[in-house]
Structures are given as C-alpha cells and as structure tokens.
Image (tube, rainbow, N blue to C red):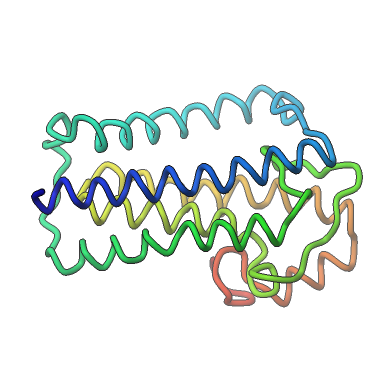
Length: 201
C-alpha cells in the first residue's frame, strides 16, 4: 500500500469512527431529551448550513473515493507534516468521545437550547465553551493537511470564520438568555474554541 492510500485509509477510519461515536451519543440524547428541529433555527440558517456542508461532504467524499478528481487542489506539503496531521487525526475520535460524553443529553444539531438544557462546565468545557466545534475544525484541518488538499484547507478557513462570527454568537445569545450572569461569567473565563480566555478564538 502506498503512502497516499494509507493516509486516506487513516482519514476514512477517523471520520467513520468519529461519526459512530457522535451518532450514538446524539441518538441517546434524542431518546432522553428529545430533539430540536433544524427548521426551528429559521430558513436562512438551514440554507447557510447546506451551503457550507455540501461542498465539505463532496470534497471529503472525493478525497476518499476519487482523489484524482481533486488533483487541481493539491498543495506541496512535506511528508513529515502530513504524517503529523495523520497523528492528530487519529486522536480526534477520542476527543469527540470526550466532548460528547461530557455534554451528555444537552447535545443538539442546532444552536438553540433544549427545554431542560444544563450549563456544562466539566470535561473540555472547563476550558473551552465550544469544544465540539473546536474538534470538528481540528479534524478538518488535519484532513486538509494529510491529504495536501488546498480546497479542504480553504473550507477549514471558511469554517473558522463562520463558527466564530456567525454560529457561536447566535448560540451564545441563546445561552445568555437561558443562563444569564452564570453564562456571562463562564464566557469571561473560557475561550470560545481554544483555552484562551479573552482571545480571538
């Protein structure tokens, strides 16, 4: 097996395992506390989600099953850096498990809060307010680097901007309404995506 094939096998295994872990916890949360329909966020949010998600899924799918179709997006990335990215990717399913196990039945597919939503401040939430987004972005960056795919890296940049400027502010507005001063204090003492209180991320 050549290195390109091996790296794509790593990516496929990481994504598959992460989806299984996340899917199992999400299904458990739906049974315990119900679900919030995506349409409850409004049609603009649904359309924006599709605009961002469909190119990402298509690109990852092509990387896994027809990488030659993305030859035009290849970057010159040193093999050592690509192997490092593969190592980071391998850790991501464990991070996904840590996050979803910590958030428990509060997990949702929307930025809205459930009726019995709790303010989680343990596990990775002790340092980062949105570790699920952080892990997803880390996995996307690792995928882009290990495949040397400039398109995936561009989608990662768009993802960072979208999460930080659109998704997180909307979600936190709902959390402030729900938890008031407790969430305001939590927001001041943690980072949004990195354990860096007051930092840009």
